[in-house]
Length: 289
Image 1 (cartoon, rainbow, N blue to C red):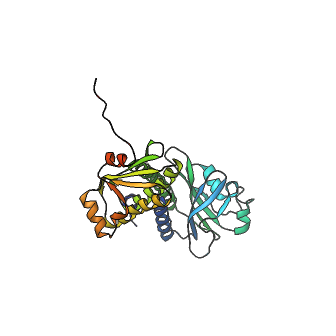
Image 2: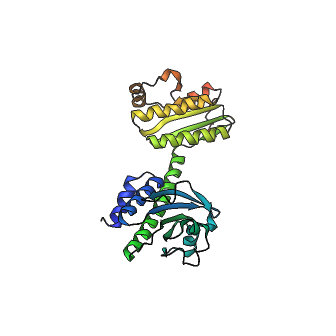
Image 3: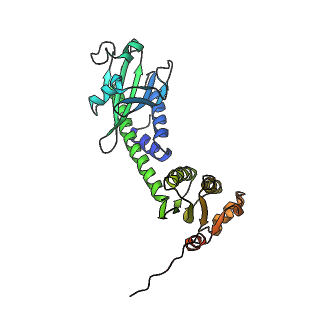
């Protein structure tokens, strides 16, 4: 088996977000441990939701299952703190015996450890559950601790990436009904979809009439991304916001031609000053005193 450190580095390089990392981690633990059900749950201190789950023989849980947080084994794990909670027999433990979930299962063992954000807030838990008793070594316990720490790290990366995405495509209001969307950096399919979601939400919130989409800050994107990027323009038009494209470099224009995007369908200006002029604005340089 690879070391936990090697696995962590591979996960960080390979996966794009928390969901992908969580699913891979559960499958990896499932290959190592003889536990029927491994799952990751998220809680808001009121409801416990199963985010990811791997069942082997018996389907004990499914993704999307919701339970009152106070009635779950996950609550006991969170209350236990940062250490792994192991309950060899859920029917004999004084904390699990009175729970409805124990009555439904009838027998079994549980292991769980919380997942935390960097600032100490609890996200949820990573757990194992089986209706058959299981025995775990100290090495297996460390595996859960390591995976919990890894998921905490991936959570922070996920949050940081979303913040970077927000900053790399800021919608900047310049006057009532008008905003500029400067798209900056390396654009891939995931980012362009995120930009589309943010732009639609923010533009409707600002009650825009015109949006100026400036592409001059893009450093790289492939032909497929050009097609998706133009969907943002079409989407704005569909919701009643007039889009104007600016800063289209020759390489972007060539990519659009290769992708069979008809640029004649869009209003295009060479720069922001010309675009503003087209919708009735004039820029004047202030005279120095």
